[in-house]
Image (cartoon, rainbow, N blue to C red; front, side):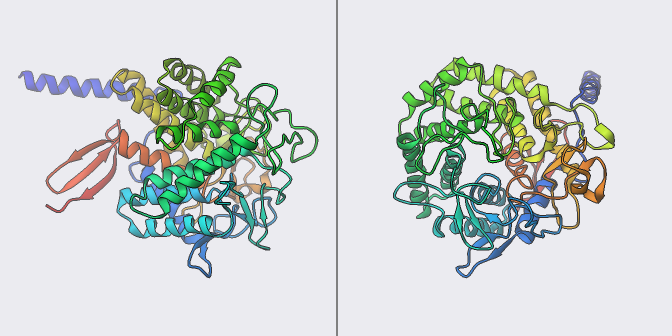
Length: 472
């Protein structure tokens, strides 16, 4: 009898918890017929089958950093005839996501193709090996290298270059025994040294958003006039992320520089100006996510609890202001974050980065604060579940963003709807960045049940995300 009552009590408790979740303003249930993993797989399949092609050396090269649901090049756009490792093109980060999810799923063809994408960046002129300087872009139409998305080389963002170096570093972690590994680590180290040696300091003690090729401060906006965020962009957080990652691996020692720059960041209450190169706002949602992830890493490297506390309270807590808790204008937006007040479209790479930040927080607190951990976990799942509702066409395309109030313009929407998803995406970024938090969830947070002939991965609401047959 006690066993029966105990089981009934457990069922009632689970039912009450489920009802609480349904009543959360920021929530979306899993779709068992199309899980977050199915969504991530479709995004990567779109990238690999519709948006890359082999070159004469056997590398895989992106046809464009901006495509439609059929994988057709949108050459009219700034990103349309560009490819490479820079910002929205994101070849190294995208290849790393394909490689790591391919490893987890046992898809060796994905891993092979990811290395072919990586080799294009390593071997085809983007990287100055002696200095560590990384050129972000190459025009697909002319073969010309350029430093920015405007197809010019008058300026570039040192933070975004540092992000590429960081991506090379974490990709190298996967390549034990591969000769590429030491090469990638060397480039990452030299890139950090180039920034340290050449980037001109700014008056507030942070880093400049843009510099010239020589590292001198560049204050104009790419769109004309002066950029008001020339020294308050969160893009520079990627420099600290690279420094912390190199220090953690014993490849350099940036502890002094990290303390100095984090003091500037924290004294100002946080620097959250636009990371995206073509937006201008003092508070951008992805800036808070990147800040949390960077400060959490730096706190671990420095052994400083005050930095960790700031990361949770000010940075992760700052994401709350961007939550959309209803479907706006008949568009699926409940469970997404809008980007910023001045440009309030909901973009998918920023949402994926927020999901990753919440999952990292959940993993960090799982043992010490389980209730808070579950809340963060559910927030991250909610984003991925809502993102899964925004694949379009036959090939797995995930929209770059959800334009719920016609900010971008009706002519750019799926089916020309007045309010709706945008009919373009960046293959290696907006389309597939959901792969990174999805894999983190499966490896670090999902419940793994091993049975005689299969392994089952479930989320915290007991939804099955993956079944894998096991041969004994």
